[in-house]
Length: 506
Image (cartoon, rainbow, N blue to C red; front, side, top):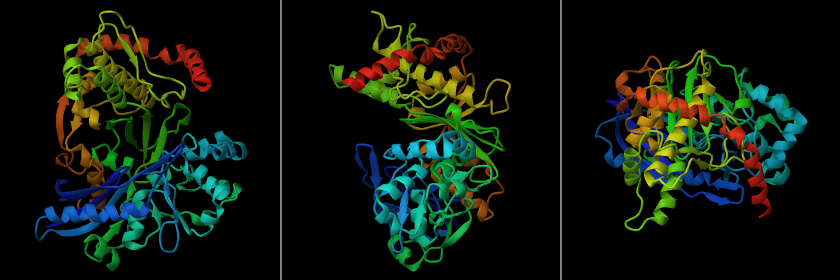
């Protein structure tokens, strides 16, 4: 029996997984690498990705069933990276998506091309995080480094693809995050690139996810243990792989990611971009479709913050997530009239407000730790409702069924139930969420191999760990709370701006 090796080149490490035709992980391995951060600069070493890939695969081979063949290598990974590739390897460190050094260059793009024009062509908000701005920064700040490069790669998985087989390619999902892709035409926006004095010849070849791009070389085989000659398939950005891997790769289903940050997303046959509401419209692994994403800057990070604060104040063994969940479960729906705005680091969807901050409204002498914990969960869930209503306004087409839920916050039964109540929809917690991206990459590869007809695969391919049905009584209360919650960021905008000014003066 053959399997697929999926490599997910993440923000902190490489996950290697060997999956069978049912999407089951039969062996896996993981290896970490360092991130270099200072000020507004966040970088990683591409060669560290490659070394970690070898280490993760070495651990995988120790678990792999004897006699199981490898039909193909599938990849996913962090998107929106800026990686200069020369004749023999990376030219300097990769600039990560979260790096914001190109603020001046982003303003130059707005001035010379126009923010409205960029948004209209790319279908997405334009920020210093875009590769377009960072490429311009390299041309202005490090021209010698750019001069010795041959190709600009856009995702960590694409560097590993080059290491495996020599291909210099990019998938459409990743390309759509960079500010360089004409979303409607599915090609690089070369006119705008040339207008900024940059050469489109640096850009990789666009390939559909799952397309064969080469085979594992002898040198790569020696470094990784992958059999030489194994087909290497075009990878896909991690959001695209996760969307497919949780079962939302076909229209009519949507999912939420509840990690430190968060988002709601779904596949659509077609959609009108709306960057003015902070919605990202990305190409699906099938470049004829799109994935629309409404991101939330701080989601599960709100509970992480509260745990840290209460842990410092705790007199005893400390505050754990288990204890927080018990406290939240004991508090009533509505947290005794306490509302929480989950904007610890500002917000970008459904409104852009970098100065917004988190706050509790309704504190009293009777407020307890359980009320605080539950209010944080409820406030975050209310923000997810705002994301849903932005993505799918009342009366507009869009998924209305169960919400598939992944991320660390999905481990909390209390939080999952609150989400079901606030959204008035069942919540299905995805089983084995850590392998969602690997499962998605394998499903894409399986179509190339003829194992699956489409992104739906079979129900068994997308296991669900737990289902939470909405409580109508709680839902009625949350409707009232949402009516109070929704306008608060506008009502407090002047206050947030004044506090931001004081922070700058201090």
